[in-house]
Amino acid sequence: MTFDLDHHGDAEVGAGLIDLAVNVRHQAMPGWLAQPIAASLDRLSAYPENSAATAAVAARHHREPGEVLLTAGAAQAFVLLAQALRGARRPVVVHPQFTEPEAALINAGHRVERVLLRAEDGFRLDPGLVPADADLVFVGNPTNPTSVLHPAADVAKLARPGRVLVVDEAFADTTWRPGVAGEPESLAGRRDLPGLVVLRSLTKTWGLAGLRIGYLLAPADLVPRFAAVQPLWAVSTPALAAAIACASPVAVAAERRIAAEMAAERDHLVERLRHVPSVTIAGEPASAFVTIQLPEADVVRRELRERGYAVRRGDTFPGLGPQWLRIAVRDTATTDGFVHTLTAVLEERS
Ligand SMILES: Cc1ncc(COP(=O)(O)O)c(C=O)c1O
Image 1 (tube, protein in one colour):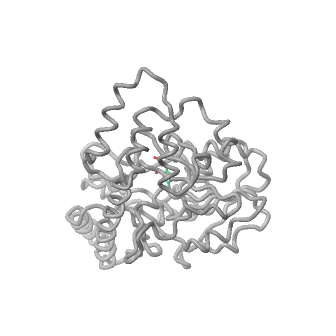
Image 2 (cartoon, rainbow, N blue to C red):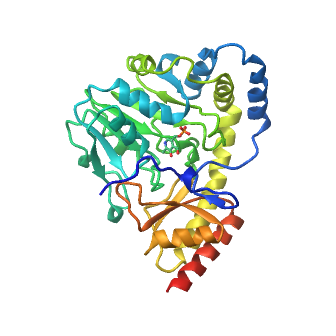
């Protein structure tokens, strides 16, 4: 079976449709973020200078600046890793997950092996499934598209000398657990795990998909290898301004509040979906989206489009297939409207 690894949710969104396909938050930018981005426009005649942003991101994760590489979105990091680590002998991608890591590896000439997590296991990571001699491993946490958050201890078990372990934490800022102050299960601050590379994105929670800003956190001896294959001045001055703003304590506190609100909205979506006959929810959702399994999902998806809703198809994800759809968590009124429409579509088909 072949999968269209280059398909992404943005291709599903069309004029007039309610967007439940792209997992970027749709809210006005707070002043502490909008102002520095706007002010940076006065400095566009100069080439970008990234040391202040690198230091800010390092401080936010209690790391050294030499352990940070700012990137044009997390997506650029996949390409840098795939190019810089061309010598890897056995690259493994744990699926289902975002398809760009595999696409970037293939484009760089790697032969990629897939490890498939199973619906019956709630798409939970079993570290034992990854071959012991895999020297480059990609795993998402929380995982897009399943929304499953693996225990940090299980992900950490994958780290070992002689291996680069890439943990895509693009959605870590959307996770939340009562009584936990920070991001549950994030490895971003861990400096003790050999070969650990953590990828982060600032485009989701902060609605900056068009600005392109993210970063990787890695041991200081690895960072120069990734920097060496990065185009010069890859991160623009406005994107650097955003990185500084989003690393501030104000931003981190706001992120936690947003994640807590989203947890309530996600619970609402899950609860509503549980009452829709023939719908099964993947795993235990913990991020900005919920993935469901239902008969004839692709027909249902097209019918939902006719009625104004864009949802993400599941058939382009290895480990899922045409019977799956991914739905973004939105405010409860949008969710109610969507679930009402989904129920009507399914009733008409039964
Ligand atoms: C899991 C995951 N990782 C990384 C990315 C890339 O994000 P960015 O916008 O920072 O390039 C995405 C974007 O959809 C994603 O879903």
